[in-house]
Image (cartoon, rainbow, N blue to C red; front, side):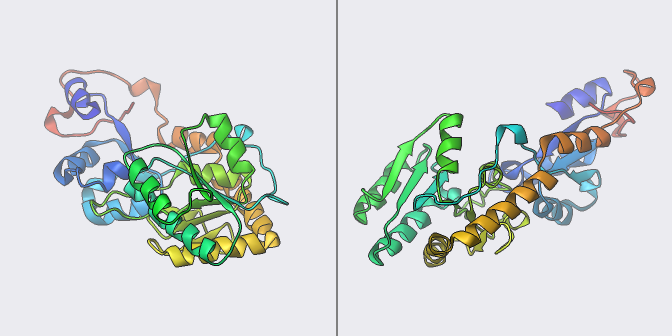
Length: 290
């Protein structure tokens, strides 16, 4: 719609591309290329996305820039993870790309080893019945609890009281995948040690053995091993937690990142003019943007 409005008014446009805009099977590459080509500025939210788009769309992506998402850090107060109960938490929509079936399999592996813990899965979605059936199949009803949706405040409290946050993201068969899950940023900001996978931009924030533990996607054994490792090494969890918070403050502060966007999109008010004879119908981008 912005592209269409730009072609009519002569006012240029910008947009931000997230994972579903880039990777999903429904993406029409010709249309996306056109949106890129005629934008004044295009933003994406991870280095992985940036590299992927640049390689795939070439000159059409000449206006592309990377700006990370940001968090209002005053709303995510850090708490070091000392002396937390053995609880794993995951917060997501119940869809394939979140990899929750592998988390349930990992819990089954740990239960067979005699590890005592609880796993809470917060959220709702189309895979609810399927995941619940998997839990029942493994006799995990007392270990893995699907809580359904929670309020934002409830989620924050549950995450901050948990020993581990697990985000076993995968690339779905239709190509759908996460770009840089905001829920991981939030868990890191709150101080909960995180485990996630080497999918898309996640390694930019989960730096293995520094800001979290990074595993291969679709690997329940690795996930179970990582969970048990954090359960048995509180000092490691504390170190990962502190480093993760430092990274969030440095790279994902919403005030800093909004300032970056403002600088990128800074305009000279003297050149903002709407001229019917000078617009996108001749396919020439203008020198102003909204």
